[in-house]
Image 1 (cartoon, rainbow, N blue to C red):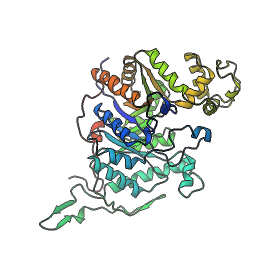
Image 2: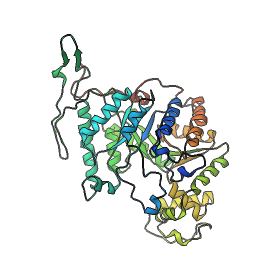
Image 3: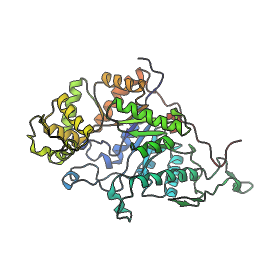
Image 4: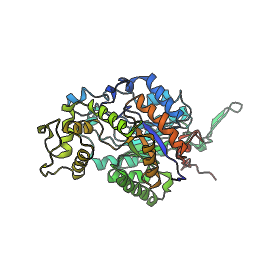
Length: 444
C-alpha cells in the first residue's frame, strides 16, 4: 500500500499508562508516574524512536472515584507538568514537550509565561493542550463551590486563547537589541500592550518574556463535544481524541477539518491524533493474552460499577465467571455503550468478570496484535483519512513502550509511513506547521 503521507506519533505519558492495572503488570515500574529516572529513560527512548512529542495530561484534584477504587489507583500522585517538562527539556534535544493547562482554573498571564518559558528552555518544543477541566472537584481547590457550566467554560476558553496568543506576541521578534556599546537593550517601539477587556477576562500586558521560539507553542485541544470541536476547528493544531472505531474516526476527522476550513484555516494545519492503547505480541493470540493478563489485574469489585453504567443495569447480580446474559432488560443507558459491551462479549467470549475488568481498566480504543497487523491497521487509518497519526497509550512500562519503539516503529519506517529522523528542531517543524506571524508586528 503506497502512502505519500506519514504518521505523526505522540506518547501519552501522564499517567504513564491509562490502564488502571498497568502498575501491577509483571516487570512494570510501580512508581513510574513519580520517578524522574524512569521518566527520563522513557522520553529518551521515545526521542530515539523519533516520536513527535511527549504528552502530559494533568489533574487539578485527586480523581473523584470511590475510595475503594482510589486506593488501587496509580494516578494519585504525578509530577506537575511544567516542572517535569522543564527538567526533561534539558536531557533531550528534539522531541516535543506537550503540557495540559486549564483555562478554567488558571489565568492567561500565568499560562502565557509558563509556555513561553518552556519554549525557550527547550529551543522551540513546547505545546499547550487547552482543557476546560472536566473534574468538578477541581472547583473546591480554587475557591469555588461549584464547577463552571460546560458552555461557560468553553466561552472562557475561546477568549483565553485570544489573550494568551496576544501576550505571546507582546514583543516583535527583533525587539531585543542588546547593544552593549550603546547601552540600548530594547526597542520600545516593538512592544505591544494588549489592554484586553472582554466578557470573561481583563489583562493589560505586555508579557515579560520574549516571543517564544516557535512564535506560539503548538496548540493542542482534546474536547469532542460540539463546543470542543468548534474550539479545535478554530484554534487547534493537534487534536487529541477518542473515537471508538475507524468509521467514527473518519466522521470526526472530516468534521473537525471542515470546521477548520470554515474558520479560514488550511486543513493540513490541524493534525487529528486519536488515542490508542497499543499491545504488541509475536502472535495475535499472544497479544490478546497480554491484554487479558493486564485486565485481570484490575480489581473486580472496583470495576463492576463501570460495566453496570455501560449496560444500564446492575451487573453485580450476574455470575462473575459466567457469560453475560443475553436477555438483558431494555434501559435508558447509552445505546452505543451498551451495544459495545454486547459486541465485545460476543466477539471475544469474555465473562462478566473479564468485561468488568476491561471497562474498569481501559475502555478506550486499542490495537492489540502483531507488528504486521498493527502496522496494516495504522496504514489503513492514515490512507482512509481517519487520522493523521496516533496518541500512543502504553499498556505497561517499560516493556510496553519498548515493544512499540523497538518492534513497531522499525516496521512503520520500513513502509515509509514514519520518519527515520527528525528533519527540524522545533515541534512545529515536526508537525509541518508554519510559524505564526506576529499579529501586532507583521513583516513588511
